Length: 106
Length: 347
Image (cartoon, rainbow over all chains, first blue to last red; front, side, top):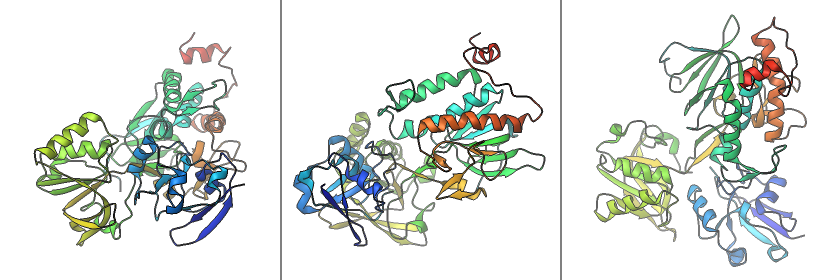
């Protein structure tokens, strides 16, 4: 099973197992990772599951879709590595993925 | 604080707080038992999360409906409850809820509507939708004085130096509305693309080209001022460098988020930020106040529209007994009951 490491704003780290095909957001919620709200439940319509993808993983994870990029307008502290975690699907290729949660989701 | 009532209280059987799918269906179940409903919702349209968060997203778990969009479900529910002529108070938030001595409740909204109801049904979902607040140090000091999330009166902002932050329809609409009255106006957005009506975007760009307003690429970083009086907004570029914008007023438009809001102050028993209910009547710790849908909790609770619908049916039975304690409730099916057919207008 691929692993994801969440790094909270205060530096707290947590690594979880993720099923292939599940989203990064789902794994955060399942494991009670603070800093991911996911108000809309994964519909790409609230921007409260915003993460900063670790620079080393940026290329593998890829850029946001146009719709996701639009939703990022409603997030704070948006960076070139920003993604909505409900739109990142886990695969074996992403085993070891590192994402950071921002100070505030909304 | 709720304002003084603008008129005599509206009297009704049930007030439903929240016009999402479950609040709407509550009108139906209460209506079958002859209870008249008023609905209050902070959003300007009915539908709650279905309308605000995922109008175009498909829902697959409504029994008998293999797939329907959030918006489609709301439309169908509005059609379904039409025979019961519910009255809507939209764009209003219930601020206070008071129990009357002789039974029943007084509810007052933020714009002064007062309703007297025999029962209250809280169907507020994730709580009330509120504007997202930017994570800026000392923000609270400026809120309501220099930082506003909505504009009630354009005139109040005449002659001010204004910064509008965001790139959606609200940001663009207010940029266009305030451009003629502002002393100066700067639109601050993180990219040169906008999730807004193309017409608004081109109008905004024309104003920039004419030199009437400014557009800056960047994000909110800090506020400068004293005693709630803003003097500068500090913005941050993508490369983390910062720059100041002279401003007396900041209007951040970053969409909505859900907060439990005033419900938390009504003395109801809460568990984990949700309203605790029993599973016979879906009544809260206060007799006559019910809670259905995502806002309630009980052993085994699932936040499903399906579960919310079921909860309204049982809640209505209990609510009808509160409203008409002497009336015998005869259990009837909509398929066969002639009296229900009359209520539904299908006889």
